[in-house]
Length: 333
Image (cartoon, rainbow, N blue to C red; front, side, top):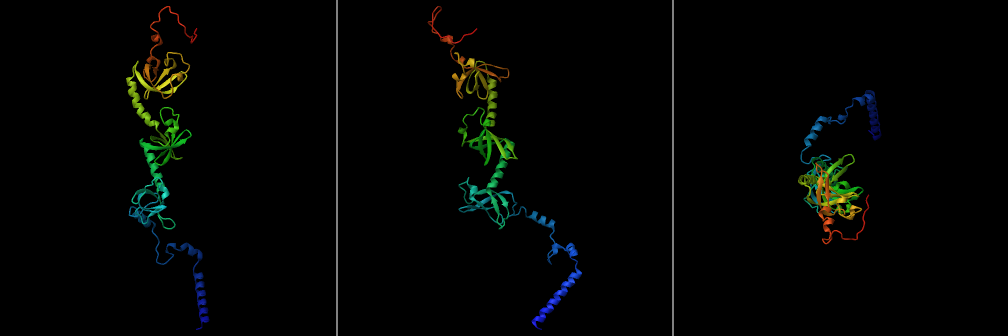
């Protein structure tokens, strides 16, 4: 049989087969009845329930990790640019050394927290992040400190409008100027680049804002001192205090958590026009308790009473009938 005759017969057979299929199979019926799970002979349909059971069985086994999990890994190798991290999975993860800039002493064998970003990228590589893990853990610690009232350490980074920016667990928190101390602060720069203790007083989860307070810690200590001081107050008692505020009518003195007022008339035996002629802010001085109310919440103090009265300082040789020359300081009705 020639090659040409053979090819002709094959074409005739193919045509007959195609016509037979077209006669016996309706295309619409084929699409509706075709079992796509068995589109290849020998392959059975996948049981979704069995698949889920299989995945659940994998959980907890060695090498199985979930995406978004924060777990502990081990640094097994460090290159010029990256750290290779082993999390006991089927492959190691690679993290840029830029994420460890805060830890210049990173070495092989160190334990670090990492976030499983992806179990596999397009090339089948495990994707990890140390920076994201630190942020997640930092927020967990901040939330816990807020709920429990735990005292945390923070580093004052810089000044900002109305207060300071404080680094707490790697999160930038806001320290309002009114929450730095119980007394007014005039020089904010003295706190920059200092590590201080704070309490987390407010968290805005929507905008990821954290507010801390150093004043809250001081007030807690002062409250105890205040109760002790008030219980011991007596008229005529002399106490040491610090000038907290100066007004045109007098001076407020901090007695260690309790404020008292020295009226302008009790600052000096001589006439003065303004209290700042006698005292200045933050000055330490001794004052005497002149009076207080029943609750000892309003305390009247005196400064001039601790010095000799002018009449007591008169020359002993002065006697009735002597003529003296002096200056008129005030005229009254």
